Length: 259
Ligand SMILES: NC(=O)c1ccc[n+]([C@@H]2O[C@H](COP(=O)([O-])OP(=O)(O)OC[C@H]3O[C@@H](n4cnc5c(N)ncnc54)[C@H](O)[C@@H]3O)[C@@H](O)[C@H]2O)c1
Image 1: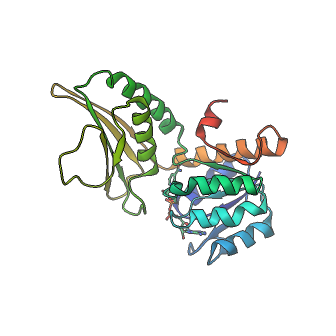
Image 2: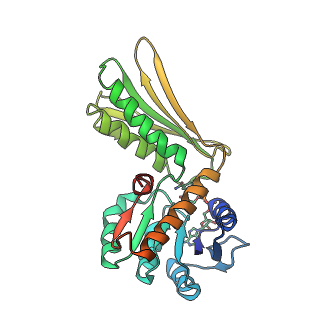
Image 3: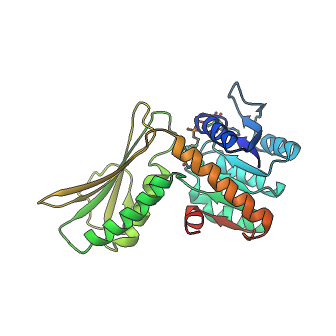
């Protein structure tokens, strides 16, 4: 499979490494500034021009929260399936879904491609369902990431919050800012720390007067994210090119993991 990598930063490099080891070919590395990228561009449209020129089988985007939407919009008309790992843009998910339909293309997105994290989501949903039976337990989410991360809370923390809320109907509102009044019981606090080089830590607390349960997923490095993104790309390309996966829709880790 021929891959165009848009964003040749920490994740782009790791993905190139893993994709190549699995027998894929990275035909373009595209970045705004990265000195070792094959193509330096200044806009999403210039990125699209490179893709049109190198004709990859799949495009993988790990760029910046402010850039992802414009990239997606510029790349979708080219017809190659797109895998997006960039976080912090999903408030525009409905628009993206519409663009994917209009262009009859396919887009796979995940705020977190790690298999461990995706299993953690399931563990959290089950744990939340169990704990929700007991009024004395409150819940909250905390995450930590390296100090170069551009968005907070992490996409993963927001996804975890959705699983907590799905399983616990008493939590109906996410609060990501600091509290200046006493939290209400329906509010789910999602807090963030930015420090050093942490690749990603997420904890869910279930807390009562008597005790506390803390469930934590701790990434050791970026390998799990990169491997998941390459797997998703291989799966999407194979499915779209063979016609077993329909075009015109979004795909997520739930689609990949339910096979
Ligand atoms: N989904 C996941 O599993 C997962 C895992 C880790 C990181 N991420 C997300 O991936 C994104 C990138 O993370 P990173 O650690 O590689 O960041 P990074 O800053 O190391 O690299 C991003 C690169 O993208 C380049 N860039 C920005 N806009 C661009 C554009 N329009 N075209 C081409 N290049 C562009 C930047 O110059 C930079 O070199 C972030 O949003 C991060 O939160 C997702």
